[in-house]
Structure formats: C-alpha cells, structure tokens
Length: 368
Image 1 (cartoon, rainbow, N blue to C red):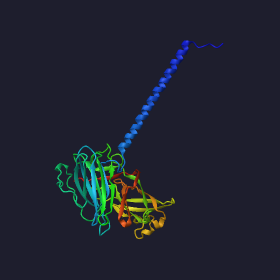
Image 2: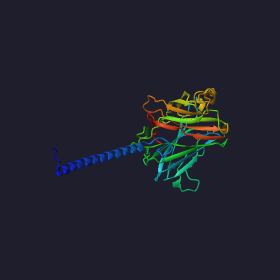
Image 3: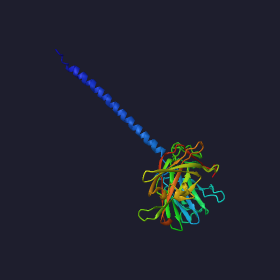
Image 4: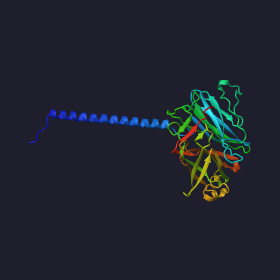
C-alpha cells in the first residue's frame, strides 16, 4: 500500500522548491549584472585606448606632407573641438634631401599658437601668420605667430596640445586638414591629419609614449588600395601615377636625431599573385611608387602595370621592429594619385590595422 503525501508535506516541498528558484533567479541576476559591468569596462578601456586615425580629435596632430616649393604650397587647417582655449606646440620638420649628401636635412622650426573654444584657423605655408591680426578680428582671437616656410621645404608638421604649464595635455582637442596645391597645373589634393589620442595615463612629461597607454599607438600594418603605376584609367584611359609619403612616428626633437625604419611591402594583384619589396626610411620619404624597388628603371618595379598586368592592387606595408628601446619603427603615410599628366590629383589615406608591436616615442625639445 502506497502512502499518500499529506497536505503539509506538499506545502513544505513547494516552499523548498520556491526558495531554490528564488536563489537561482538571484544568481542569474548577479551573473547578468557582472557581465554588464565587464562589458562596460571593456568599452571604457577601448574608448580610453583610442586609435590613431582621422575620425576623432586628438592631443597630437601629424601632417605627413607639407610642401613649400617654387610651384607648390600648402594650406594648413587646425580646429579646436573643445569648449576651452587650448595652446599648441607645433614643429615643422624639413625632410628635403640635402643637395650635397642626398640625406634628409632634418631642419626643425617650432612655434606656439593658441585657439579659443571651438575655434578653427588656417594659414598658407609660404606666408604663415603675423604676430598681430590683419583681418580686423580682436587680438585675443588671433592664434599667434606662424613663421613662413622658405622655398625648398618638403616635410611634415606635428602639433601637440599643451596645458597651462606648457606640458603635454591629455585634452583630445584637435582635428586638422592640409591641402596641397600645385600652382602650375592647378591640382589640389586634400587630406586629414592623423590624430593621436591621449589617455588618462599621460604623465605630462616631454616624452610622449605612443603605446596605447599614454597616446595612441601607430599602426602595425598599413593597407593601401591603389592603381599600379601607368595603369590606364578605366574611364578616361589616362595613365595613373602614384606618389607616396612616409613619416616615422618616433621623433627625437631634443637631440635633433632623425628616426630610421625599414618597411616591407606585399602587393597583391587581381590574380591573387603576390610580390614583395622593401624600403629603408630615414626622417622622411616622398617618392613615386615604382621608386620603392626600382628607381633606375620604374618599368621593372613590382608596382608597375607592365610587370603586374592588372589595373589595381592591394599593398600591405609592415614596419620592421627594431632592437632599439628608445624608439619604435611605426610609420604613417599618405598617397597621392594623379591622372591626365598630373593635372588631376587626389589624396589617398591608407587603412590602418592593429597597434604597433613596438611603441614609438616622440621626445619634445626641453625648451621652446
């Protein structure tokens, strides 16, 4: 004979099960809460880390190509995106080849300007800005003196946000653009400056670590989509040519020592065929694409249409890590594509992939 459970036993069993369900529900809620907190921390970490790019304002701006020659000039634009006044230390670096040695000159000209809240400004490289406004604006709205560049300048411009004590600031305030103008052909090419974002770990000394902890790291790899040199444009049939500019991320402005790095290139054509090349870069490099591996005979370059037989390419550019502990090997780059004998041009920004395996360093001058 089977004994039926009493009502009292049923109630006790139901209460016990209810307590178990409540406990499990509480555990699920706690687990969900911890998961949400973990995800939020990951998002905060990613936001704090930031990446070098052109889409967000940064605490350091890098213009990889500024020209001031007999036929070419540059319009520089910088904007303060914050609601407070910011001061900037800017450094021009002339990487034009020395007429005697062929090596980059590495001549540095520094200046300081300030921008009021939300203020944009611009100047032409050949004329700069005078110490006083000439357009009728109030003196406190004038950014300050920007020295004009002498003819023969082919190089870069860097600007760093400073705080009231003239030390590097964590304020991600700046965006910028540069327009390269050829007075002979009327060609213009405009590109956005690369912005390095500061994190909360900035120790405000004059050694800027580009390691994703103090400032954004430079890219581990650059990916450039482009036409092979002398490939015919599919619409106009005009031959396409490309010039590319490389600037090392590391720079020692205190000791005036140019940075050297080596770059590896892998170019893939439309048949999935791969060819490679390499290029050493010191301070600054600005050259036609085929000169990377065949300066004497561009038609034999792996970047030439005659060698590849297809119109377009994907080229991967990797800086080679070094053993140096005071500087990294990262670079930034800008490419310029020309048609119709150079009368039509546009700027190309490579895609950046990953952070550098070896952090770069910018050492500011001790006095400025």
